[in-house]
Length: 200
Image (cartoon, rainbow, N blue to C red; front, side, top):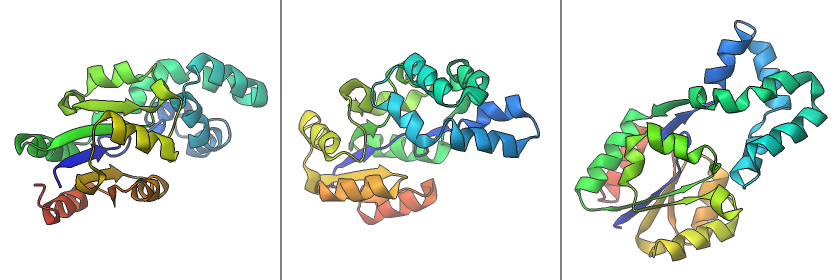
C-alpha cells in the first residue's frame, strides 16, 4: 500500500450547515432541524455537488418550500461559516503520510462554486497530487463511474490504494471498485488502521 484517496467533508474538512444556521435560528434548535431536514437535506446539497448551480438549486427548492424561501436564500452567504476549517487529527495524518512519501489524492462530492473557498481556507488541500471534484464531472459518490474516473485519472493501482470516507455507502462502492476502503469515524481510529497497513 502506498496511496491514500481521501474523502473531504467530515473527514478532513469540518463542514456542517448547522454552524451557520444556529446563528440565524438562535435557541430554536427544533426549527433549524426542521428546515435542514425538509428544505436543505443532504440529498439537496448533493445536487450542487453534481454540478447544479447554487442559484438554480435554491430557486427550485424555494418553489417547493416557499415557507423556507428566506432561509434558503441565506445559504450562499452562509457557506463559509458552515466550514470551520480542517479536522486537526486528519490534517496531521495527511502531513505524516506526505512526509513518508505516500501518494495523496482526494475524491470528493463538492460544488465547483464552493471548492475554491475551501482551497483558500484549508492548507492541507495543497498536499494532494490531484483532486477529483464531483461538480466538475457531473458524477457523485457512490456512482461507480466516479471511482473509475479517479483510478484512471490519478493512475491508481487499486490493490495499493486505501480509500477513506465517512459514509458507509461510499466505502462499499469503493470496495466494489477494487479499492481497500476504510470507514472514517475519527482520526484516532484512522491512524490505527493506517498504521496496521504500514502506511504510517
